[in-house]
Amino acid sequence: MSTYVYGIAASSHSALPEDMGGVGDPARPVRVLKEGELAAIVSDAPEGLRPKRKDLLAHQNVLSEAGAGGAVLPMRFGSVAPDDESVTGVLAERAEHYQERLRALDGRVEYNVKASHDEEAVLHRVMAGNPEVRAATEANRQAGGGTYEERLQLGEMVAAAVQGLEAEDAAEVQHALEPAAEAVSAGPESTGWLANLSFLVNREEAESFLAAVEEVGNSHPHLEVRVNGPLPPYSFVEPGPSEHAETGPQV
Amino acid sequence: MTVVPAQQSGGGGGSSGLYDVLELILDRGLVIDAFIRVSLVGIEILKIDVRVVVASVDTYLRFAEACNRLDLEAGPRKSPGLPDIVGEITESGARGKSKGALSGAAETVSDAFRQAREEGQAEPRPRARKTTSSRRKEEQE
Image (spheres, rainbow over the protein chains, first blue to last red):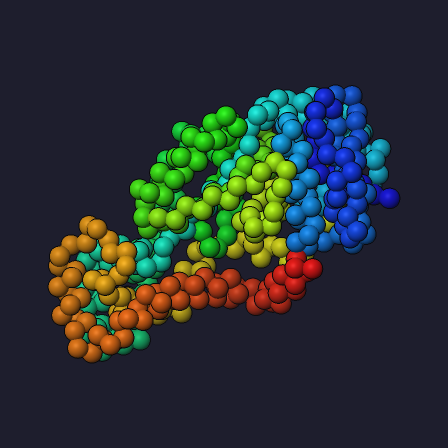
């Protein structure tokens, strides 16, 4: 029976989740494997595990529960060891490294911030800030919409301006929030947002971080800013989180 | 301004914020070489170069259309620093032929963005659509 691994914590962790429901259907009960000063939060691995909503949630919930009681190094979803012995083997082998990471992340949580443009507001800004776009728009209107080529040209100009604003705003969001956090890590790029940033925040300073996020929203009315957290420190499990952003593992 | 705090307490979790942090659960976190990872077929759809979305003929045409219809005066979030000259140009340009269509301008603009983004997701990977929908179905199980 292979072993699903949720995360690694110190064996002195006061509230490791046991017997709570983990991944699989029916949910496999969560167990704790101890090896010296480290502990792995595990369960049996169900056959044919896939990234289904229910299993992703189970992974996340087990880690949230464990993280509430002390530092935990969250595993990436879907990590399966051949058996319990290979898990404790890895703990023994890399004990020093994991202990260093647990100390570094003690009392810290991750907040993920995503920003996207309010579409209408950003087009207003593009028009307001670009005389060329205004002139081209006006010319097309006069011509009853403009030819295919003219419309293409205008659209390309607008797209370039929108992209420029996206890059500008992404840098600004990061710049504004960095001072309120201990580290920052760029999340995977994708569609739907112009900035995806994870911040490592001391639990005790969470309130001032959230206030900084709100301030960014207030001072940038054309941005939609969403913050998720506190999360297990997914983005900070490797040393040097600021470099991690540039050189992090690519899937 | 829209700031949506999605608090996840230590004990609960809840599904509301799951989609928002999906890429972290799947793409960040500790990896141990000695362990295997379950197959994440279909998940790579998350990683799409944003530039692809904006740079396409369809997107250009939509932007052009959106700008032609954009009512700079009536926008609910009119930019505070908007120069007067813009208003004049828009007024003279919009008066008459496009006045009737202006009420729908706001929706058109957001639709253009949304469609552009959606198409950008689908276009570079024609086979991805099926994978995505089957994945979604699985997630809802």
